[in-house]
Length: 100
Image (cartoon, rainbow, N blue to C red; front, side, top):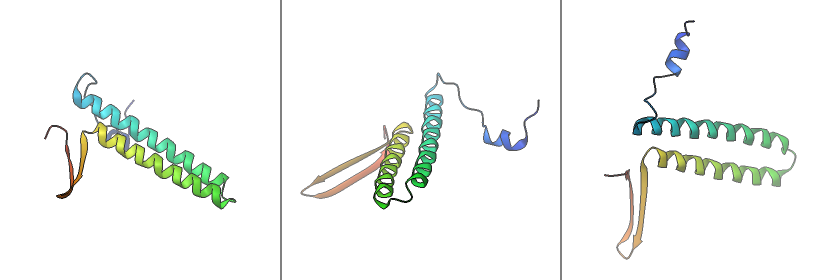
């Protein structure tokens, strides 16, 4: 069975899971899939509580927290680290890949 060209483009060849890049690719796909599921849950939740403004506010705040957690996990899985130092000299923010 031949796959249509659209599916071939959407499903690139992933590296093997016993390599570092393979584990990074798997973690990226897992976090991406989980974020999509949470987005669907948030959309359904907003629709269910659309008549109550306070519940909509709480749900929106929870959705923002989920996005923050998802993006942080995605950055961590992809090897990004953020270092934040505040002192008498000022504030230093370093966003670089791990190991640099």
